[in-house]
Length: 242
Figure: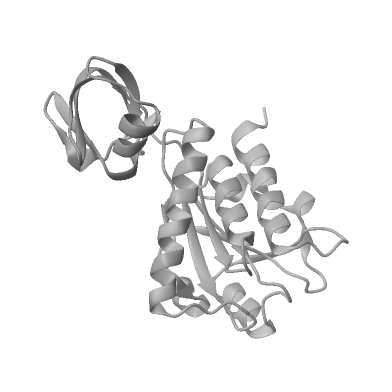
């Protein structure tokens, strides 16, 4: 399937632009009259006939359409930005595992601290990775990749109606087995720290905000492993467990 933005849908027609148009026209070499499947990243699925191919856009006539509604729980991954390509892997796998949103954060112990210019390049890269993973996994909803934020900032912005969980290396944390899974709300913010963990001050701030601190077991997991691990467990417990 190919992505079409809601704002590019005009009545019975829509217009495919940029990378998606290039892929349809120049890579797969679809011609006028071809019938192709599209999605809008917000639950809409379309079957369309190509009626015109131009240099910068492709005009498509809608043959059929249907809409799916999002169902809770909604997972928001608050991810400390790791080194090099690790964030690409986290974005890819978190997308496949059905997150609603990925929020890159800079923490006290973060090594990666991108400036404004680099942040824009990274966001563009991560959004491309997420789109590719969405298409590969046949998801209908494209996750939101938020702007890079500071740890304290995101704590202020999370709605009080949400649940927060923060895996960390503190002693006396709950195990995932000990969690009361029935008490989690529709929106769940899962914090994953940098190499070296969150600082004691950050853990304290999160707990004051209502976060539950948990252990992911005896082994110290890499940040990318921790994200995939806990999202998989939350998926099982809150979405698929019968």
